[in-house]
Length: 247
Image (cartoon, rainbow, N blue to C red):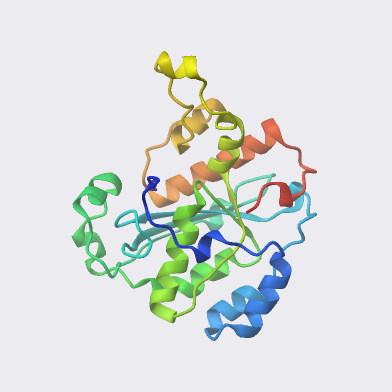
């Protein structure tokens, strides 16, 4: 999992979700050409009023060749289905995929996936049907939505000339609601105070969740699922509607 700087380009289409997801899914199911995307949208989306206790989630994490979804590519995918009662480890998936752009040496240092690892790996299109089936009917949970949603959208636009858009719960954004709600004051800045970190590992530590090695897509997906469960337990309610969390 990478974290983008403020100067990084973002996929505009992946940043402007429709406020009415049900209508959007219906429109997309009737307009997209790719049968895999058509099946994904045809499965529909839950109602905004659905309480969190009834929401089927899937945590999703990508490792990538760099920071820019328009230029860089996905090298690994991890996903873990869960709900508020338990994490469904039997349904967890992990794929290494071959990007269409070269590996960046700095990204190799971060995620540890090398040229030899991707040499015989499939293109994203070989696993797309399985990926979309795993996401189908579930609410995707990520830690920073400008990675997973933007990168998948850009990857499909390049390959299918059709992007993808879906609601997500962003655990980083939920932490920002609390820890970045107010900017640092003048005297705090003078004293050298730093904003509270909302990185995945630091966010987990605030809920006394165990430390996991970072930058493995499957482990980070599991870590994100556990973080959301803790956030809901501490700051929301099982009866909170999903509309209060998704974007």
